[in-house]
Picture 1 (cartoon, rainbow, N blue to C red):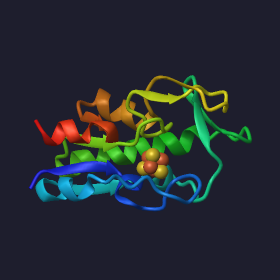
Picture 2: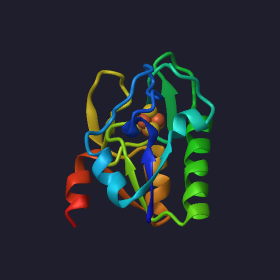
Picture 3: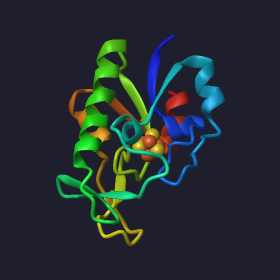
Picture 4: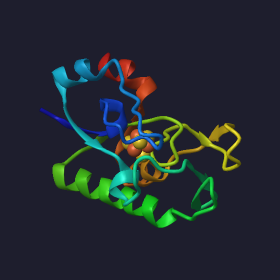
Length: 145
Ligand code: SF4
């Protein structure tokens, strides 16, 4: 069965910054056809849960209290890439709007709930290395391919 990397919060892990999750209703359908490998780049990058929300500001990532967490975000992205290489993963399903996992949109760096076109640190890294990136909003289309 093909393995797919997936944002851990999408399978129901409570790894979101506020201690919650973003469980997708399509997980069971995915599991019928794929082996899911849940991964949270922020937790694996060394950040606690719950944690302050962060946003990308240019090439840096900062928490809403001003703390620079770029190192943690880059570390999480590197670890995600290592897992993909190690397991031969070619597709990742990632959580839209996140500064790590956002696929098409991320928050704009002003902590005012405004989105802009852009991608998270992990999404960007994986995409540039040739991994196909899909957001949770595109799972249905992916299953219908
Ligand atoms: S970093 Fe990604 S996997 Fe972790 S909580 Fe945020 S969106 Fe979910």
